[in-house]
Length: 363
Image 1 (cartoon, rainbow, N blue to C red):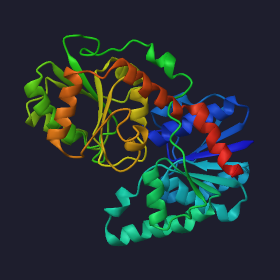
Image 2: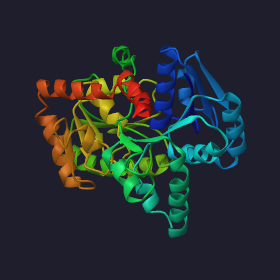
Image 3: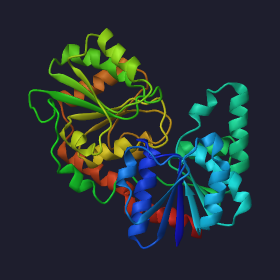
């Protein structure tokens, strides 16, 4: 099968990582693979297999339509798989001009759209409702994401299915064995709290930092590591300084291999206001690290099965989150529960989920 995966870029987001994971996997399985990127730049570009052909449209999303249409018409793939909302809309428009089967992956709940100004919100929902019907199938990565699509009349029930993200590549076990290089990780004098994700208001690392202030007051050997970069970097650095936490909180830039950080941390904490899925939760569970997550809209409660495989806490509650972190530090999760969580994480392995993606075309 000739498969074309469409992605805006190769930046450090979850959708871009999934695009690369899927392309590499399908290529290894003998499919002919093409990635069409609006801009073929970003840290994940170096992880694309030599078996995958990358087409760089070298254009911003608002100007990319004709280049995208030309690329898809010239390649004539059997399947077009678009991995994120903006590229879904553009592929949906181009679908008027070619006959490939199309799968859209809806990567997030519609929380970001609901807070837009009224006109912008209407335009976005209208474009989605008109373009998503061009897809043969839409894959929602959580039940909350599916519910948002249905409640906003974006797709019909018969067209949308829920499949978690293909998070764990076949190489993740090897990545766990690489050495970690950080002054706090691996040092038994410290209890390290880890967060991995874009520095963005959605991820709400500010809430984690404010909570850490309370945790540190009771647990002087606690340290916080945030792995990520983004638009909120300056605000986060300023908040850390304002709370006199500079010596106890470290922001680490994007890591090619975050698994060494997960493996060495004492607890992983996600403080998002909403998520599409929550790849980092799966990565932490697979690394045998206890997870605490806000019970926000999206995938966390699905992944953790309502708290069976990790702790869920009320969003934006400093008291509840601090209690959960301190409890985990003082009374760590039992090994048998860590193992159960790892087995749960394997349900979101790349081989398993990648095959599920293709199977939806037969339903």
